[in-house]
Image 1: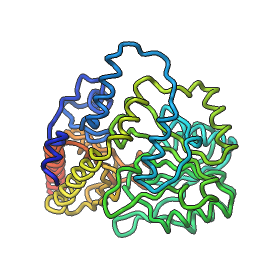
Image 2 (image 1 turned 180 degrees about the vertical axis):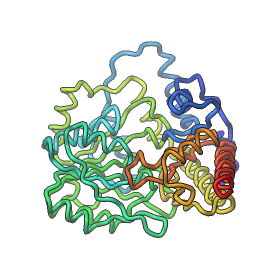
Image 3 (image 1 turned 90 degrees about the vertical axis):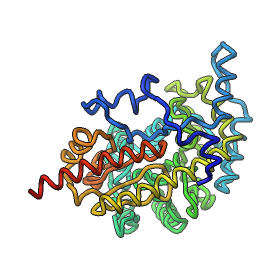
Length: 402
């Protein structure tokens, strides 16, 4: 860890977030019923955004007039330059459409690419809004469950082909994977692309965590594999996870296929979802143009937090299996040796430990007995949260052995 960067960007400094309308901090007691809980659940970071982003927002706010906003061509060009530099992906500015959020885009795309009653593939355990955008649109969840082997996840490609051959209409891909932190390898993505082309199944690829990948892993955009794959792929991206600006609510959908892109834009216009708020574009432009050094320093710090967590569990809770993430700042922990019962794990967290991790069943039944821990916080908070949990677990296990 580069100490100079830690000091420069203040990653070790604990900042009070209570009283800022933070969903993560201000809603914790209301949602989970206990005072004094340490929140390590919602996927935002307890770090300030890059200083260039903060400065750009301060300058825009100082203007004092917050009128309707037009998105300039230069904003799309900045995003394209970022995708080329960070991911070797050539994107044309015309392929980009803004959206208030990735989940909004997922929902609209499911609606456009399928009919009520159609099957939509997901790979559980997976980000829980995937289920909502399928079911609340009147579609059926088709579960191509990931295989948990040797403390990691692998795709079940034979099962995926069976679902596509049986008539599933769309696939939702989570890349990098949330909650498991897998960064899919080129050969895995190529296999998905081949099957999608063979059965003419369009893929909606949620790549919101694409910038949060740890060396030596590399994120490969699905649509970058080939022109053919690009034409059946809609890619959902955002600066929100990368630069910690989810509250500004902006995202981008990259659709190379002109016909689908036109339908998507028309539907977004019908829902009046086409105009960014006056701060979102300013922040995103500053982030994509100037946020690279901050992001590199952040990844170094978060990697250190992950290493600390791995060592902590090995020393204090060796019965738990830690799936070391290849990307994201979310760590997936197998706690089934403690209990596979969601109610027991929740009681351990909320009542006995005073911490909030995400309980795994919210990501699908395959997540039962797992916890998702957000480590994008100052090291001292991570140390406190893990210590609280370990003490509670040890007391629980001792009582149940008696």
